[in-house]
Image (cartoon, rainbow over all chains, first blue to last red; front, side, top):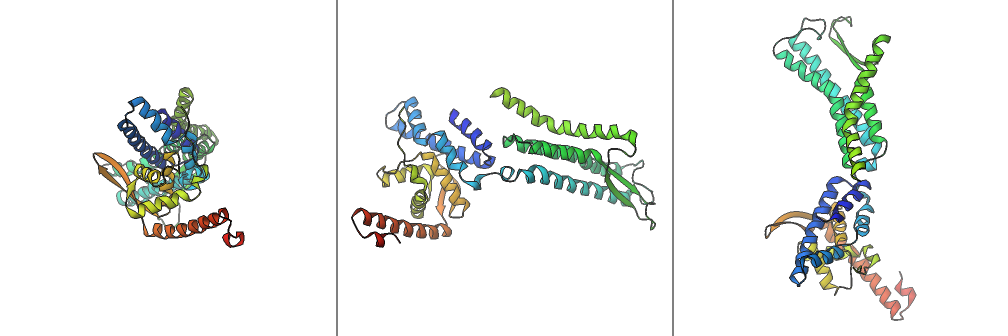
Length: 235
Length: 118
């Protein structure tokens, strides 16, 4: 595929065109170019001449890029509303994951530990698997969502601050969230699960909370930073 | 390598009209569409051939065209055809363009300006 297409791809992605549209456009252009080259070769030109003429007929990179960039409908959501894609959507996803994790905790408590005052006790058998899945969702969600943010930002060649804002928010929430569960916390004796955001229950716990925030942020931002570095080095 | 001369104003609604007109008769893929435009306009209308795709995709996004992938001679092609929405759009565009062309023709042949521009 000629260098023209690589340059066109970068230009379109940087202009906020949706990656799936860029893929389709380039694929149709490549087919078109092959058809034109074949036509030129049939008319007696050698391969190099045919390729050259076909590229001229296809149009210049400015013309090909402008034809797409001028149309708002081809822009991706992350270009149209970065605040929603990198700020709101990750938070909503994180909140949904926490709801799922808390539901697993609550239902596991009811099923496997009906007489225990708290679900945070030693467990056995299938309960380990059940609660383990809940823990995986709880601790894994900020990391996976952070990687998702980085991946979208990388695919879109996003250089603005929004991805970093999203990753900081995810790390802050992921690192400061604490879950409490107690049967005796309410007078009726029903199990009570609550969630709050704090760096630590006591002042000495604050460094641990900060470390947790930093760990999540580092883990999630790393792939994105590596991609940015690669881009700088290759350009 | 000499750059080809193109019609910069070509994008102002004319490609839509031509594409819809061609695809109303039969389904075609991008390369066929461009070749058909070239041959039927005696190459008067020249454009970077690649710019036909954003127009096709825009029309498809608006519901005026539908596309399907078809394997022809071992190659995968995206064929486009006109929808009912596209037929209505073609009728409206054709009427506008016919009126405009008639008005310009009238101007060129010295007809009355007031009647021409309505």
